[in-house]
Image 1 (cartoon, rainbow, N blue to C red):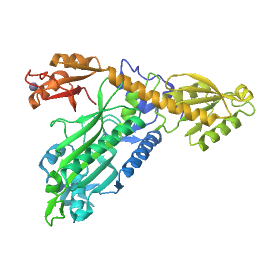
Image 2: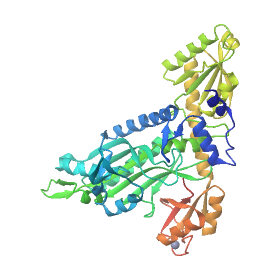
Image 3: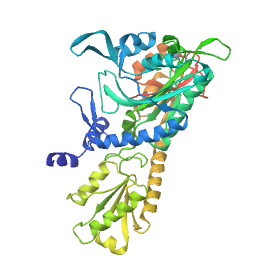
Image 4: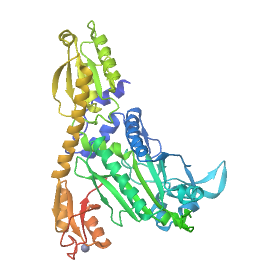
Length: 477
Ligand SMILES: [Zn+2]
């Protein structure tokens, strides 16, 4: 115990000069995660899992409001399913984990531990779907997936992670495309409202799209260091999986037709996005909507008469008003408690001591601005809720400002390189060919994040030929 406490108060690496180390320090010291015994795996500790639960709660409500239901499909998938869609197996084969022995015996057919569930869900949909009356099928699954990654970092890239995957079937191309874009919109609204992370959305290039999709749309978030994090994707799968898994229905006109499918997902990566979007030199800053603890009460000179009671009373008042409040009654010093709450990103701290109680007041300190104010204890809940809302919108505003200020345009590969090296996203013209995209990546370490809609450039920044699209380039996690 003493050892863990000591580690906790130690300095974290400097956020400006060593961001990767800062990230690792923060996720470990705030007890969000720990490394699992198998290389590349992570243990999500209670504080990290509580953030995930809040993310789930918010997203799940949105999925249900848009007509989706939850279901659960098996973790193990027959290997042969993977090979039915050619692009899909090519994309996922290098990173699947395969089970070959069960109950001490070699299996007749090896089983894949799901890296994603299009195949097994497609198989079930082909059984369930009979008539146009069964459409659309709108199902979401909350699950874990396994992808054998070579380089891993907690939340950002691990060989097992938690996510949700929506899988839908529609009668027409138009309806399936509408669903694909609708869910991208749901993700974007959720990211801004709940995570206070504004995102760029758009279509992915062929190189960056999901293996087996006709089109992939992604949302990209700008991190503190100017790198991009793909925070969610929505795929229009056309009839690729419908044909591979025989997802057919009897239409009104009496003929059998293949359905059009979509899939869309976000994962525990979003916790990485939160950390790298809002954190500062002192550690995490969590947006109130998803913070496990929204307000931490620190009793000052707790041994004095009435202090602990007043702190408990304040906590009860806040909790009954729907605030996730906690009271730090440990025997650590107030200074240590301030640091701990600060590092863990608790949005609001309330200090309460004998003098405050006499004056009928408490001290409130915001995590985002460090601003300190005194407020009457009488309508504490109202004041706290108002401040939490202000913190939420201030975090979004700050992130939005960064997102707007740090986008530059370039007309050459050199320009793209200069842009990303100074921590920006770069908009540049692109002819549409894979060779140029590859070359840009090779020379700048930046990849095409999304195609920017509604903007035009004359020439491809790489080859100088006519530009087909404006693309947002960035270095990415
Ligand atoms: Zn080109």
